Image (cartoon, rainbow, N blue to C red; front, side):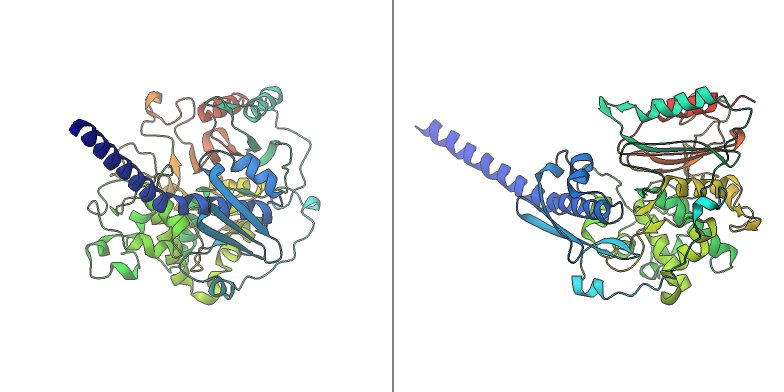
Length: 459
């Protein structure tokens, strides 16, 4: 009898512990799950002009997002989501601004925000030659093997990852600046804006470069972050933020509640959230990839150019200079662009950005970035032991001689790339005169894809 009571009591305690753990997990994870769902569904509907059914089926059908319930309100252009009725989240769409999750501030406060963006009427791009417009030439450079190039693009469009279709949605290939190959999945075309995820980090880096060129920021000066004054973090420089060596404790793990998921889906001011995190390492001594660092950079841009100029700054100083008229950055609830993650553009416009870096920061004869910015951008920090990261760009690894030590062994050592979650990539390979864009739902075998593209260059 006593043994039975002990067993029942032990089972009851275990059950209570399981319930407590489940409640704790739900409290931490459900708002992230519903926040991710709401933000991405809203952007899919109102930026990409896709149906809710299509976005959910293609992008949000897998566990744990399959636990979500949602409603779309076209009258105020919003999406509301919950997980089994809990952790309700709402994302709203605003013209010229994109979609924003409601966090910390009220919906009314967010909707009252003013974004002073100059609306530019663009001429018909189909009548303007590439890269300023979309009119393409029919001739292909003689040193390109068209059959191999076409096969490489076809292969990646049909590729799989871990037994599932990678769902490549767009591929654009530039050779010596000329658009030589392009293909889209069904339902997507050259006018469809697609998410770049962390490609936004490279865009943010370019904006920092522009402010450096204008003399408004200095790379090696302490980063102008109000929360860091008179603290050990006051040593952190812009250089460290760009190279991800701030030492700030930040976990970039999307599979569970972490600093990055809490920042993106539970906080209205993402830069402030990150700035308040403690130091884990002495600044400049350790590499740690952090979306939080980039959002601090984005807020630094805001503070540097001022409130009146901020909303229009990325467009006036960068995107419209490159004729990237589809590009859109989305802000957090505080009004700061989510420079780490929320960028949308056509595949051609992402390719134009890659072409800027291929051309060493020059466009139409004008040096938009500092003359040495691109070279600085591809130098790793001494704290980065693998030598695989520069100024918010990934590098091909830490050995020019030993291909086995490169990120992609069959790709030249000079390749650098803007990389986003799920395999959103702009690859820049100067030695092969290539800029390659690949956008899709899941990652691909990037080494194989690039090896096949490179094989088509026969010079």
